[in-house]
Length: 259
Image 1 (cartoon, rainbow, N blue to C red):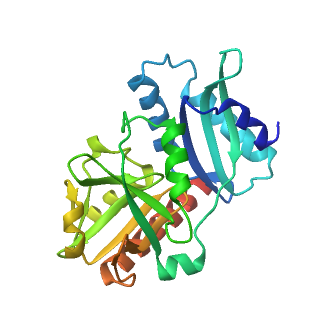
Image 2 (tube, helix red, strand yellow):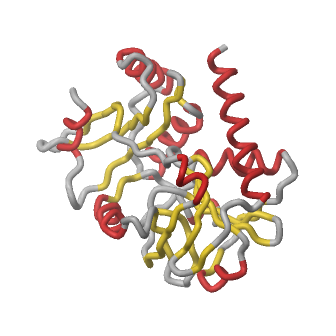
């Protein structure tokens, strides 16, 4: 069915298990990690895993081939229809990648006091998604969530890193939805001697950092130029190095998979 036909499964007040990954040159990027997290979510919410990994991968590749190896984002979701029957959906979902200008000039973000109920499970909270989407505008590309203790945890659709004393700081894995891109960025940085600390980061510490960036399936490594009223440079050498290393890692992954 057309992509838009899947919208009938996602109704307000409902939560849905899902996973989104990017297709580049007909290759599903980091598909092993995405499928692994999909099954981890099933386990965390107590849903029986009825779909073998190999079968899901075959369906993903069949979808990519049927669409002429189109680039874009694919979503896997388990969602109920109007009768309550659970359905496995695999389809290309609308996406919006950052523009070259946003990569070069950075994007503004805003803070919102809100938390995910079960942050380690990739479950769509339609109510929270609607709330954060309503706040996005030309002045807020993304919304960063702040917990009750005043710590910044993650973005509504991304993870966030702070540059502090020539090192990177990001929230502890157990407190956020640990994104696949986040995982790869941490691994690449540590492999090249860039220190990454997983620790809580307070809103009050924002003036002390030298740079901020987002990571995500669509965003890759995206500089932030402003958090609320605090501005940051987007050409910090460390940030540029992280972007370069990650882009090289993605290129190498695609080359290996194509071969």
